[in-house]
Amino acid sequence: MDLFEGGMRVPFLVSWPGTIEQNLTIESLVSGLDLFPTFLELAEIPLPTDRKYDGVSQAELLRTGRGKPRDSILYSQIRQFHAWRRGRYKYHAERMIPYGNPMAWRLGLSVRKGPWLFDLETDPDESYDISTKAPEVTQQLATELSTFVKDWQQNPRGWLP
Image (tube, rainbow, N blue to C red; front, side, top):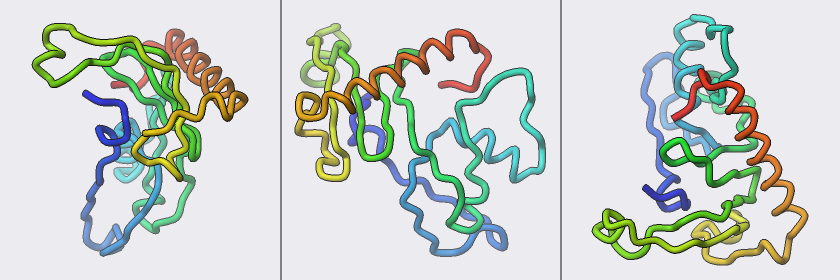
């Protein structure tokens, strides 16, 4: 229930003897949205063509450790789009943040916070907002998130959480 890196950055383990190299470690952006197109490609089944997909096949990355890595990733929660990452930077739109422990969340206790910009290379814990130090990056990522939301609204059958 957390869109900060502590709630989203998790390991992904895969084993497929004879297909996926053993003991391969890949440091790359991957989303749960990538699983559908990846599994279809590995099964040699084409993606249906009646919609756009937000996932990107990571089959080549899994097979060889090389491939076309994602350069951006969307962070959503209950069909609401709150954050966007491109490269080292992650933008969080202004939103209500649950306050306190999970019991307080059930009571609806929250505070309005953001927008924020974090440099995940130097601050992977998202502790220091740099939105005022990098306003052009903040605006670019805010625009990209807004554009994604508009595109999604025109593609409701897309593969989304």
